Length: 259
Image (cartoon, rainbow, N blue to C red; front, top):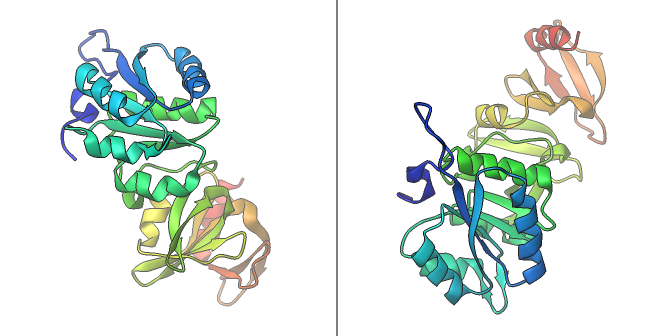
């Protein structure tokens, strides 16, 4: 996607100049929801709410007339949806979806939403969205997107159906040729087309560690460590029957890290 807020670099200044305000519009069919979001955004200096709308047609007019840097957009708009609004626009715009319906997340990222917040919006999570908007972040491909926090959620396909997985519920990631298998706390084992290196780059380094050329683990999920053969080890994870191998090199690095 070309153009849009990313080209205008909202919120960034150079050479000592005062940064331009981040101009946002709120689109939600619930007046109280718009008022709450306006209050949460008011604590962020340099964020200017330039308009509100409660349906697709007035929102489309608002975007054409005001040209905001970004939309905070509800997905359910009466009998219409936020996706209908995006289809009606004549130019791309950065989008943060704010909704109670997380089963829409896959479609949200298919249209390159910059971020996705669940109602009621968490102030800290909202702050991260504002920071990404200010940085001029481009809408991201979730397969190669921004680094994840332990409190984030991502979507993956489980038996052909897109589902959410909380990062804190990923106990391990195992390599499987060009794919990786997520070992999830509830027993799911989704197979994802992404190399282990992608997960190593995206998962939070404070909570996850590479323990083998074929495995990453969440450190808090490790129940016990057992010596194995030739100086290697096996990691037993809470609630997981199959242990995860740990190499001698990884064990030495982890000892240094955990001192």
